[in-house]
Length: 304
Image 1 (cartoon, one colour):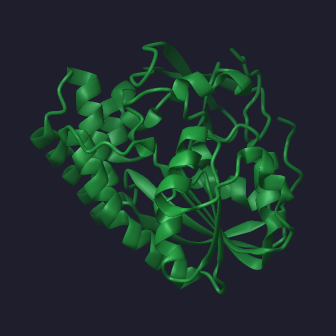
Image 2 (tube, helix red, strand yellow):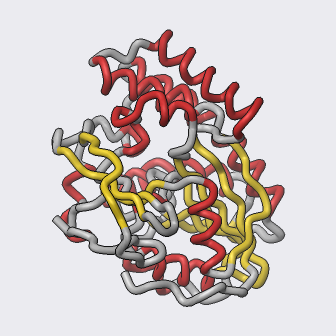
Image 3 (cartoon, one colour):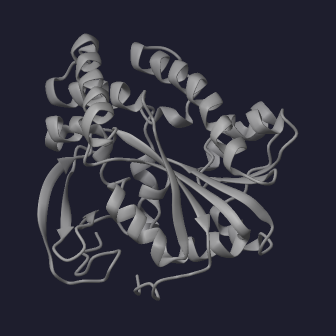
């Protein structure tokens, strides 16, 4: 395990324990989440070494890399994915001035394939070899390994998307520098991440499924993600909710807390979370952040 003595975002050593959570997907191990007393960022600590994280993704329950539609949770996941695919596509079309897109952490390629059908020039990066193989078999997409990302030409991309990926990235500062380099002037970066300030996060506490330790090593709210991207010369131009995430995350959280998905109870908690966000806080369970490259970095990022 890698013990961090400093905040992964601002490099402050003024950190403290925040919460202890269980890895419900694979190992049942307990992991701590720390909070930075200076910038307020939350991060998994200690965490597996980068070279040792792969086994924590080896589970049939990790359904984002699965074809199966058996079981209520899987069926609902696939229905939700079909709905959100169109919404993602509409957001991309609205904010991008060009049609050359990279989906970083593209999984099995469903999103890329939907754009490919609309004559977009698409490429993807995915560290999971099984997911890359499925993208090739199902959609004839040639998805690259993470190591090949640096071979992409500088200034060649109109838009980069990360759908629930940023929270997984270890060298986050290095990667954001690379994203800026690969994007054209005024290029767009879209990142969707869970929101730890949502009502469902507060209600479920340590059982909130979107902590997803140790796969999620960063835990964002609007302030922390905006500050991080500002550091790297991006400015926030829009925030959109992911409405279905509240229901899906609540369903998993119910299962973690009580041993049963309890779909009805999860539905009402998801509805309560979305209603609270709509009427008052804006803190939906997951948020889509649309950033524009401005090349005006505030300061040099800390060493990781």
